[in-house]
Length: 211
Image 1: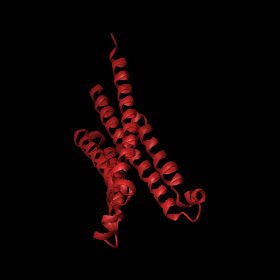
Image 2: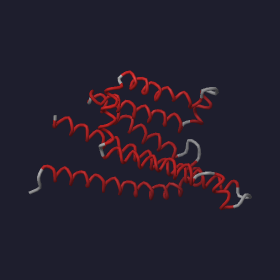
Image 3: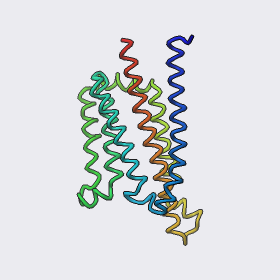
Image 4: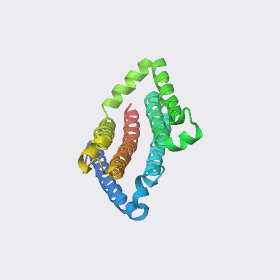
């Protein structure tokens, strides 16, 4: 018979295994999407970019629900929710370029700006909540997401880097490869944020039950 701690540990590792196979399944799914959408798979407002927005929307909903339920961690959760909202605006830049020619997707900066102001006005609570977050598995998952966004999506998906490999005369090929790397990596990064949202929700709930 497993102890309560062992049961929690087993449940945690079961979730990690499910997350891993889900990510593998999503990558395989991208392969099949190219059979239907071909070169439009990674285009502006294409299937991958819209899927990113759906994933971000789910993460936003999880953070919002957690902020509603757990008042003592509302600043932290609101901050992450604002980050997801900003990313949604950023991913829909083509749509906002047409809707708001001057500000475009940059109007989304209002969400993290308000979250930062909220945190500064409650600095003591912010410090406590951030310290707790840094001690949770969710912080490591969020860190992995940042690694995916910067070294993978931005560095490997850099146009000049790809042109140096495929040749300067293959601009269209380089553009397609860049978008494939960047959009695929961003999709995986956003999924990691969603996983972090779920893990943070479960961690806070378990923590508050012990108090």
